[in-house]
Amino acid sequence: MTTIARPTTHPYSEADIGTTHLTPTYRVDLRPDGKDVFYQSPAIDWAALSWAAIGRPYRVERWSKEKQRWEKEHDEALPVKTSWEMFNRSFQQMFDDDALAERRTALRALGKGLGTLHLGAALEAFEEIVQETYWNQAHRIEDAIWDPRGKRALFEGLDVQKPEILFLGAADGYEAMQLMAQYPGGHAVLVDYDDYCRTHRFGQFPEAYPFLGVNPASGAPKVWYKDEMAIDFEVADIRELSYGRQFDIVVSIGLIEHFPDDYKPWAFEQHRKFLKPGGYAIMTTPRAQVRSKIFYTIFADAMNFAYRELMDVRHLGLYAHENGFEILRHGRIKAHNGIIAKVR
Ligand SMILES: C[S@@+](CC[C@H](N)C(=O)[O-])C[C@H]1O[C@@H](n2cnc3c(N)ncnc32)[C@H](O)[C@@H]1O
Image 1 (cartoon, helix red, strand yellow):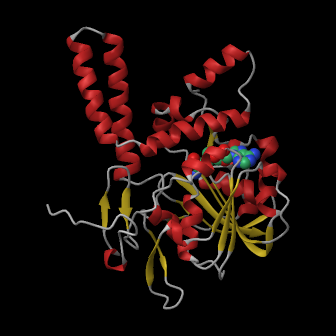
Image 2: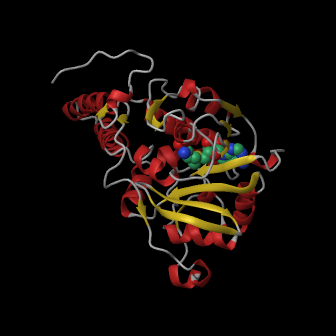
């Protein structure tokens, strides 16, 4: 195998389009299409669909030890914002780890634990091996979390030029960057009330990560990088935003499912109230598939700090329809359901 020496900034160019390869912590994927990108679901008559027909979303209720410990110590429910602070730190740790190196370390610890009959240490090392193996497969090999090809396909075909984009609960801001590569020349506001997202999750998002988009001058495919995009990060509570109807696109990725049904109308209103007339709301939620249930079981300690539902695309679409949206496109990507909608 030959290793190509690449510059550390902007290491990929248009010559790499069509290729994919693995770095220690993520997959570079500049393949423009493929069979595993976006499964657009057949048309649904949303007005005729009922909750009785599809049932309610699945709730993830296996909680992280850290959350349980906090609640025992404080004798109260973990405040929602604190739960996100815990989530963001532990989730980001998984993105930062070199999973295969961590697994090698855990394998050595397992051998040592078994050899010295420290069974507690051996069990801990075994759990670590399972997690690193699963994370390596899900994030690095399958790229099911960032899922650039699925997201590109979901986002394609929007009628926008140099869009103003608002990302609610932005975390690492990945999807705003993908949108800006596809619809260049615009500006994005990332909103998250956890400052760690500004400083670390987005702040330290790999500068070398290539986003496949378009060259606005020629219409040809082009590779974009974070530092070429006009992005502001606002550390704020979504409930306290004072924007007008000024955005072409309002996007959230894994936000809606954290609101129990009583709060869903409010959550959808946050996607509606900042949109220009004719603007697009893009929403995704994790899928109620067996693999996701396994993921949230194996990673309960790292992920499960707050209320979370797993849905299929009919759940997400029906919530959006009931809350005044016209659904233009709906389907599933690797780990999430996705819809593109306009205010009805
Ligand atoms: C589940 S995460 C989104 C998943 C994300 N794609 C990721 O990679 O983690 C939701 C994000 O929304 C933020 N968030 C939740 N409620 C919020 C609120 N009321 N105001 C601002 N941000 C909020 C959290 O801090 C968190 O970073």
